[in-house]
Figure 1 (tube, rainbow, N blue to C red):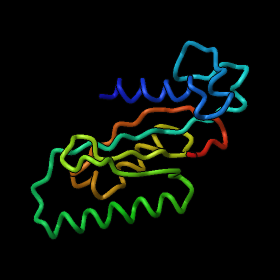
Figure 2 (cartoon, helix red, strand yellow):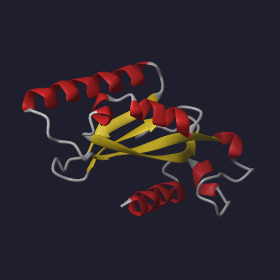
Figure 3 (cartoon, rainbow, N blue to C red):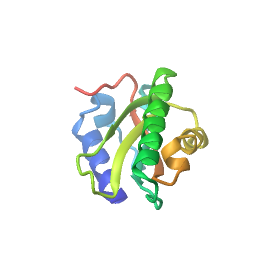
Figure 4 (cartoon, rainbow, N blue to C red):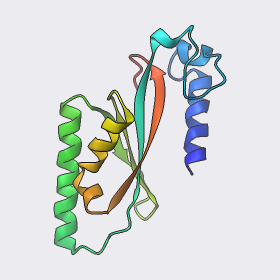
Amino acid sequence: MLKYIHCMLMMFATAGLFGPAAAQATDSSPARPSPAVAHRMKQYFFVLLRRGPNHSQSKEEAQKIQDGHMAHIKETAESGQLQIAGPFDDEDGEWRGILIYDVKTQAEAKALCDADPAVKAGRLVCDIHGWWAQQGATLK
């Protein structure tokens, strides 16, 4: 599944959906932009939220955890650490949602994930990957 996400992100980048700098990257490594465009690229951290191992909570406790999860998302967005977040349509699927963090290191992204009440409770698991996009890129 992660290979699929990686392939999709690479398709977006090579199709130019994140601007001309992303489409012109010539470095064969997907993790690093070429030196020619490095000044226009920025590293973010892509987080795939997956269904965690612990769903034994009561309905009321699960709702409290979800409320805490949403408060955590709001807090990280307001602080500028979270650029975008959202769930997937498939409510019964393994993949629950994505986050894109704007922090300096993967360790910082992991700390933000680990502070999420849904992760703490085992309802969610975070898969974190460095991801490059053109500076100032937006969804259209």
